[in-house]
Image (cartoon, rainbow, N blue to C red):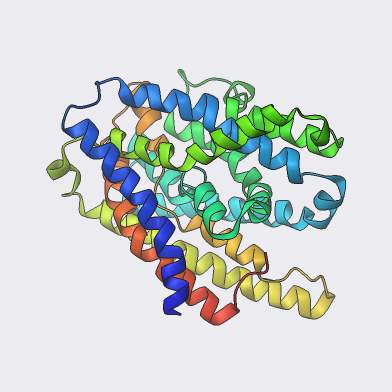
Length: 328
């Protein structure tokens, strides 16, 4: 179990060091005030699309889609349950209907399944598992940019559902799927593939630098006094992933035993990395961009990222102890 713990702890510490570097660079004034916006644009327009495109172009074939269709189905069911649970729990944290309740709804539905989940899965398991992870989180991505945006942005200021989905990472994902499904990947020039591979390698560190740069602009002492945020953070990091994985493991055991579907346990690990991560940046970025109050989202991000360095390796090691190592 200790070896498994360290296997996950190492990439978590690497990513956390990137967060710390970004935080210090911004806090010490080494970076300009607009550095966060610049890095965010690079991550959104260059590095995330590169990772999404090359992963899907390489692995999204008819054979792999048919063989992994259950990942999309299970991912859809899981995110639907997550939305229902988050809406219910948010009423406990915020009694009256307000923009703050929307932040809790989003935070309790979505972990940082992209900026943290992608590089973590890639570092631990490699690109084939990342492809499976992308399929599993595809429904989450759609819901995050539709319902998720609607609870974070005032209705008068939010864009249409289609406009929210037409963002560079999602478009690159779809183009990668088309290239892969039609077998066009071998036709890609070698220099283009090498460029995309180089950009993909920068994604994880730069995304975590962005987290550090973003939270550096907030007053730490003010961010750490909200007791509700600590409860929500522990719910996000420990309770929800534990419940989801436990219920899903029982369901998989039943379905495999009765119907011999052969689902296996790999999907449980994909679910874990999708839902056990810390809070992402959207609860800061979008409220701030549209005149809301990002304080609650910033508090959750500041508290949840350091804690996740311990909770993710511990819970993952426990899963491996109980279920065995995932088949990659």
